[in-house]
Length: 214
Length: 214
DNA sequence: TAGATTGTTAATCGATTAACAATC
DNA sequence: TAGATTGTTAATCGATTAACAATC
Image (cartoon, rainbow over the protein chains, first blue to last red):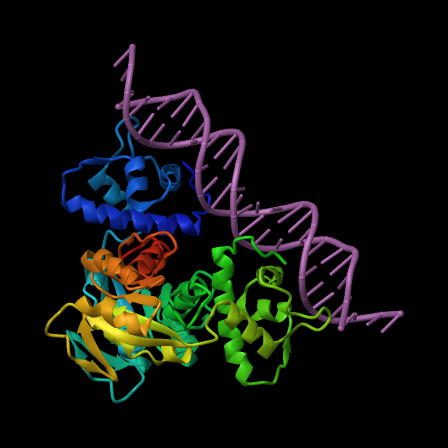
């Protein structure tokens, strides 16, 4: 065990990967038990790495046997706090925001979008499923009762910082930011950025040199 | 300089970040020149890190002076191969795919989506802007003339592997995968995964312990 | 008991950063 | 010349992985 050591970011990302994999096999329950070597085969992540990652949180396996699939699944879900519903507020009801609203997998993974905000008067009042797009001005007020602690930011870059400030003010503790800009937040608030363009840009580097011809 | 050493993945990601920042300041041309210390202030990335990152590709600055903003911008764009139009094919015309099609920033960054495919007969034939959704069966044939080398995968997880195979077969060299699954590809093909759920899951870890109350 | 597999320590690897001579 | 800032080397830091005693 390893408590009080800060958990490395890559460990958390891998935990999410293990969990995703466990989710896919937990239903077809041909296998009750799984070894770190199995995990390596399935995910490509080194078996020792897997054991080390878990060691930050406790001992979940049995020497000679392996790990009980269901149990491990529950443990990791618990560690990552996705074992119960997490309420999410979204700001930005553009193309991307609306697409995310329609993304059923979110709810399946316990992330429930409980409110959507925008500043465009033409959009405010629209319904989308069982949600009504609300005025961003009312974010704080409305989240007082909703108490969502996760925010999703799908506004244009120029508006991102201001909206991030509002989210923090409304009690949001972690933010998933789709705007291509680094927002500043107070200590204690965690931001992760998702940026397609950046991903595509990294990929473009790997294109072979002969660009347009061939 | 550092040629022939393999460029670390984090370096490429940071290059994309520098470029994004340079893009934002290149227009307001109050500053002609920028130092690594300026970069650190703006992006949070260590100044030595910045200089080291560039050193993999050449010498772009002048001691005592710094870097010419425009020049540096051009150099990095060139390194990342985003200095000219890159054609992109997309497979999967669901919520997410259609949202990406409407994402103007893509084109602004030289990524041109030149074709969209789906396997749903109800969708095939639809128009979206100047693109018509085409039958996935025709991917290879159509890309023979389009010669896109970047693929975007926005299909459900269960279909992702098969579609990835088709993309590779059609000459795609790099894939941006939005499906929550690790697709296997031949050596030489590069895949990057974008997975909201995974990002949200990592974020959930950082939520303070008292979950639903308060 | 013999075989399998864990959890953890120690060794390795790679990435980050400080320091500084070179140079504008 | 003095001050600023680069490019690169060397030191530091942290993450990955191999090895193995403990244990089912």
